[in-house]
Length: 464
Image 1 (cartoon, helix red, strand yellow):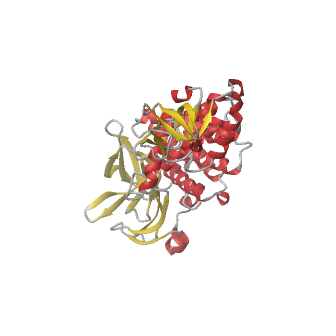
Image 2 (cartoon, rainbow, N blue to C red; image 1 turned 30 degrees about the horizontal axis):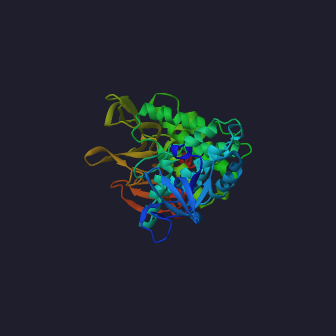
Image 3 (spheres, rainbow, N blue to C red; image 1 turned 45 degrees about the vertical axis):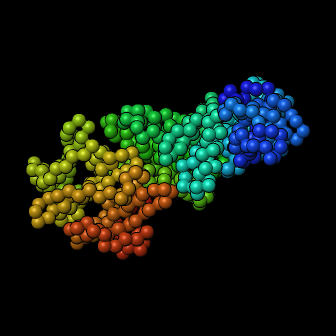
């Protein structure tokens, strides 16, 4: 923790917007405006005022005694400090003050008496503050949060990121190293260290693969026994999302992605959706879309292209080229297109008369597109259909079947952007690929009820 906590007697500011006065009276000039949770050195007491020194601003001033909490960081004070930490740890908006008390406790508690509890509290409050700092807020709240980030930075809590603020997780890592940490503390630490939105976007494929493996190991090391249902479900959802990313990276490295993808599907299925609250349902939707993006990696039974078939071959370094053939004439390619994404050959499905074929292609760990090969008046062409208009969020699109007249394609799109799930079942015209019908549920579309592909129905997560 910061050198601020090395003094003998400290004053923790307990209120917001506290004026540091030049003299021990209310009307004295203001030296600085202090934030809740800031730590000062006590120099002397004068009536109802305390003379303190602000190390950060390098200035002295006076505060009223009811605006601060004094602590000598003595072992006998540790229980009282911890009691305050317990009170503040689950109070949104009080993160800076709670972390300040927790930092004081770490200085006061004898080394042999230290448990995982205060570290768990610091990590929990720091992560909550990071989430609040990343979410849209009114201007007045933004200013308060910005001040809290400055306060916790002075206490040694490191945050990173631009639009997405993330806690670096040091307290959580210390919890994982403590043999006496209980399952709930381990679970919260693992969740705090494995957030999808805090993965460094600048990581290259190799480093990202290793990072995702480390995230999976952290989650695997948490025993599920002894956890309440809520924490267990959150672990399963997080692990499902991480394993889905691992399946993608393994496919890129020529490894077998099927075990990781199958585990991801099993973890998602293990979540008790009926018991989830609103925030957990949002996390569940995110996990489901991530699993949906890679779930074809678990498909061990290829779908049938009918009268058409696809073959892949290496193109430029890192590139895969897809060629379409008539099954009866496999020597002459009808059309060819290349991609740096993963081509899931087993997903290929064609319509009855051999005039179209749909193929899943996954360019990113949590994003899957649909390639539609079509025969038109001018020959064969390929059209790429996205999961949504914004590729920055997790999403996938997949073929769900063909109408027997060979003129319409059934698809489902799912994406999760800004905590909002978009799931659309659609019927597309094959000649234009324009949507002619769509609904939030397949039961509302007669084409789905009659013509959805049984293989798709048995494998998709869109019908969860």
